Structures are given as C-alpha cells and as structure tokens.
Length: 140
Image (tube, rainbow, N blue to C red; front, top):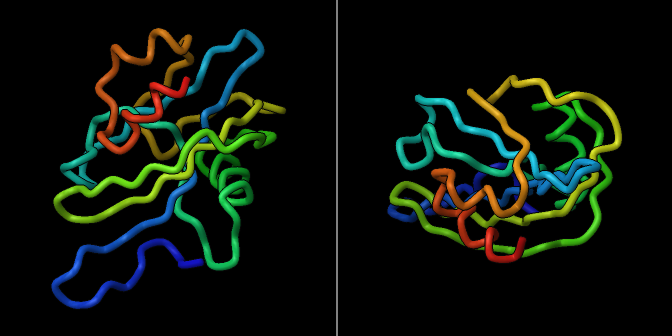
C-alpha cells in the first residue's frame, strides 16, 4: 500500500488511495459532507462521502474507522465494500474505496468540512457531488 499520495514521476499525475464511508443511521439516512474552499479547485465546495487517505499498511476498512474518528468524532462499524472507483481530476488521480458503515456512537462534529447533512438515498442526487463520488450514487 501507499501513503497519502504516491510520489509520482516528474510529469505524471499524483495518485491518492482513499477510503470513503457511506454511513447509515438508524433511519437509513446517509451522512454526506461538504468540502470547504482553498484545498483544491476541482473539489472545493462540493459534497462527498467522508473519509481519507490510506496510510502505509492500512486496509480501507481500518482507514475509514481512523479517519471518521479523527474528522467527525464518531465510531463506525465498516461492513461491505460498495465500490472501488478511480477518477482523474486535472491535478491528481484518486482511487476511492466506498465502504458501507453503521454509526456506532457519537454525534458527527464538523472539523474538516463546511457543512454536513443526513439524507435519504433518493435525496443525494440533488447535491453537487465531487465528480469522483458521483458514480457511487447508482449503487445506493
């Protein structure tokens, strides 16, 4: 496995491996978060499934537990892998591992994002998602 972003050769696009949590609550709603501004113009202000980059030696399931604890102060139980989607943005390529998760404890706290919402699966299509996250909507 690789950390954060692979160190690409000069002239190549950086590549990131990321775990994204599709977190369900007791009512079947899904938690989505809106990215802030200033990190990447390709994704700034768009909605996403929360998560983060895989660290060396971590599985996607281990990453999602760690990242959601760090970013949202919640504990989750990861279950099935929903999809693995690769997307190329103008400045980097990302491989997203979407993992279904059940909220075990905690109330999500915004630390890294500008906004969050619990929505039924049918309501997700109305949001402006990051392009890499869009394809997973068809699996939900």
